[in-house]
Length: 407
Image (cartoon, rainbow, N blue to C red; front, side, top):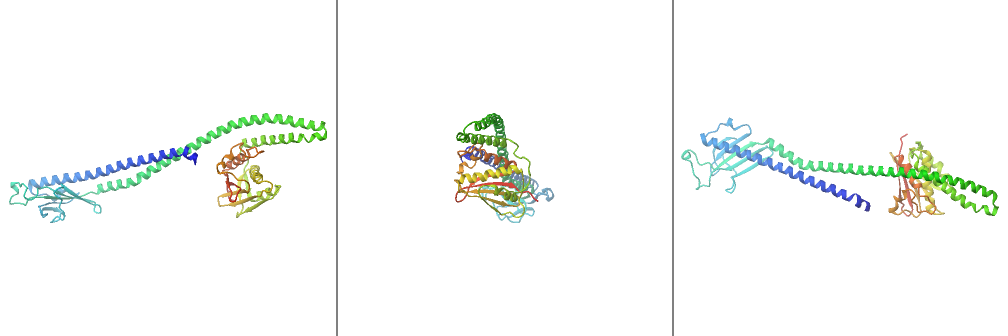
């Protein structure tokens, strides 16, 4: 959790702020276009209304053919709302009159994709000035009605509304994709760095292994000579030297295993059969349980699989003391196979679950701390995973998960 807060949280906050900034900016721009489209259609309606009224006032007549296809109706009305002149589908009486404090009223009909404008053009009754031409011929015009088709307007408005939903989702997708690429790049860089460190460790380990083996061989030879010349009561004291020499020799061999090609020579292995042959070879009894239906087949190097399982089972016995009990469980699904080694030892603290896989890290007095590192390296080379988790009731579960091979 602390590692996440230190490494990942600032990056997550940056992505969140980037997402919010882009979303707010995009919605602001889309709403601006939405409003602009609204003002344009209203301006167009006002312009058409003014042109028609001016033409009407000049010759008191309008040719319906000159109205254009987008105009469905046009009417001129007196103060009471009665039609003085109407064209198209304009009603004989207006049902709605704009207030004195408004220059006009717009009504949008989305179903029919039309815009209706009712505009005041005269003065309130008692304050209006009439042209001499209008006396005796026509009541004073007070209102204009215009209805036009607005298919293109509604298409644009629908697009803008749709964009307000889709654009944030699109931005979220881009931000998540950028985050995925960044995280993947970080993992890749860490992997490269880890490989560089491993190469450096390998060069150092090869040198040390070579330098250690030569003195060990000399010590082993000299110990053998001493056994021949020393009295029998002194020979037993050489046992400690031999044991330590053997331990160092085994350590150098393990380092060699860690540095060699982890894949080895993979072959198809029946895990259940493999375990039935391996488990009886331990000095203590290992309980075995399998829930697999059919053959549990994996693609793994046989010697490396044996090394992994022997290491996990021995760790189980060592962690539990003299009376330790170790159980191996084999679980199968359609695509995965799990080999679980369970013990009742002291267990592993949660903060140590990953650290135990570090090379040369150990809590044992006589342990080398490289066994689990080698085991995980072998398992991951076969596209699997190895993890240690606390066992209910005490102890540890070592879970090896591998891809199941079809028969």
